Length: 149
Length: 147
Image (cartoon, rainbow over all chains, first blue to last red; front, side, top):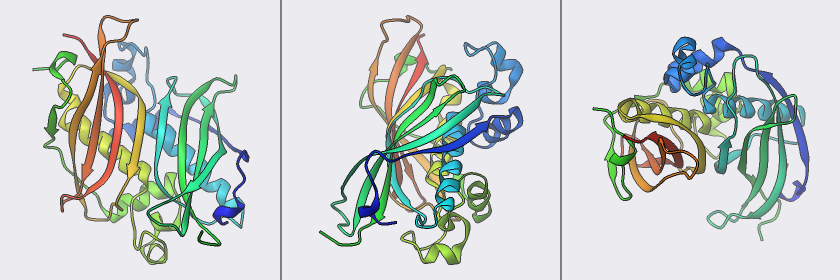
């Protein structure tokens, strides 16, 4: 898929993930070893009142579902990202929480340092079964242009 | 001694002592679980992409920065969590064998209207490799308890 093929407003539902206590703890042990992410007993005494997933586990799950979705569309190859913006973890994700992930193209712009590429902006979200937003951020992906302007 | 909100001030710079040495195996493990694209999974396939060789997923890079900040700073502070990353830039590929560290600059501190027990600290985390090159920059806001 080329930059020119991307349509602003295109929306994809990426699927759901139910967070398990073991994966929350395993991720925290390696990358985010705070008691609220690691230790169900210690987390009970915290303001969160129980174990919560590292926010970085939630974004990693979004990425995994995003890649699976891209692999289902043969025209879309791997993509490289220069970063993201305005990421908010709005509600704590607990063992047993099921989240539904989505992505929507919100804009397209030039990428001045490498004019053969274009920047695609997206609004990415995770919602629970009741539609409440737990995570949102603006994603950025660089795609090759068919024609360099 | 535990650091509190009052111990942070705009302009303050902190070079953390914590280090993270990343292996090819850990890059591939993370990618298999969370970001299975060829440039994070396989060195040969990665050579044919713009990254020019095996490189860590950006989300793993963020998680490593997080770990370095916990080990080098947050474990010594009255941290009450964080819920926002205003900006993240992945500037250079992070490769197998890279040894990473973090330098922090405090950008702003502020007090919420609704709560008296915490304050906000907005800071910039620069993730550097062993050659002193900045591989990623995160601008993020966390809550620290007041003393």
